[in-house]
Image: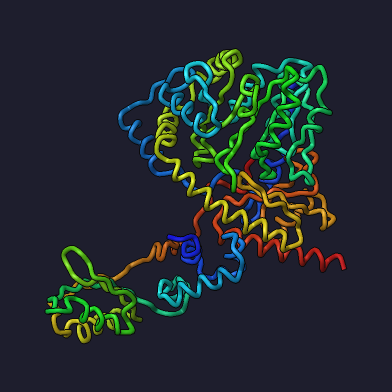
Length: 393
Length: 159
């Protein structure tokens, strides 16, 4: 008999499955569920991108690329970063094409975090940071972004958590699940605190294309920050390419050269077809991205307004494709709210605490859905709230 | 296409207040803009897209190609206007290519339609020939998938 307890590493055993997963299982057992739970675009990848991929397949371009990624793609990424965040990265030493933003986060953490290192993680946020930090023996230290600050993290909150063991700050903006965006002023203040330290920033900017009103601003644009930041981005959200699994990271070559070794041994290179497709995306599909952003913007107003009208307070978010309404007025916990909602009116949303303890009292609602779908879902949520009211009498 | 028209085309039942929120304009402005589009004739009407397979009505639809001799002065316009004036005709276009007018009509059965073609369309002065194509199944109409619910491949919940 195998003693699996002894086989599976302690760090893996102690890793908790994502809170999102459990909810997925419930929704799947029910009939007629409509969802607002998905964290990926409802748009198809722009046709030009798909066509470019097909063409390379037809030509049989299916070998490995260099570890770092296709030369053309690294160059295009460099141009893209120059244009969007006004920062120069050398395509030959400061950029790596990764398997989605996810691999970039993983490889960055593995390249820098050692046992005992403290890593500041802003929450609510995407679910992978803390587990990956723990896997490296690091200590995740949560910074709670507060609703009254629009879920932006403040310089004071960062400063408070810094100790002599702090190695890294993970900055997840535009934010999943809150939709919060850190603007130039907000970031300058964070930079001011970090500048005096030896802390490295991992800035997860996967939603950078999806901001409304103002364009995205990156912490690397603040003075002295490029040299201490690993910028994570990718094609999944902005270019509607989730399944292609393609992202990139950019940072100082003193760090990137070591991340490249991890990438090389773990992955070899990112998917070749996807890389060719991404070249086309960066060269010729930026206007298509802009069209998607316009569409999201319309839905964003509609959904945020809808929740506010229903009495579930909701900040109008500046980015990503989520709203994060408070459900505190119902007196239910996030989990109870979501469970009751899916059983009663068959609408799936994600409990806020799946994104960190401070997400309790909120739900994450994705608006990567058609307007008619959103309308129907809001209608059902309204009926659900009426039910709740009636049952409490 | 302007944003307001695009939204109305996707769903004409969006209310003025919903449209106002989505477009970040005030409700009064949107109401005026819609009125203007209507009075100018930019918006010609609103309709429901119906899946007849689920109603009790028997509906047969046909697409008819019409070859026509253009008339002096009016060209195709007079004939097209005559055709368009028939209640049974749902659409009438002047086409490039091997025929001149493309028409869709609906009736309750094949006989209805063949009678219409034989008695109303063919005798019109200037009509040279007709070719009638019956619709067997509608998959998509007015940008809306008719046959079945689209399945969301993304599942219910993902990070």
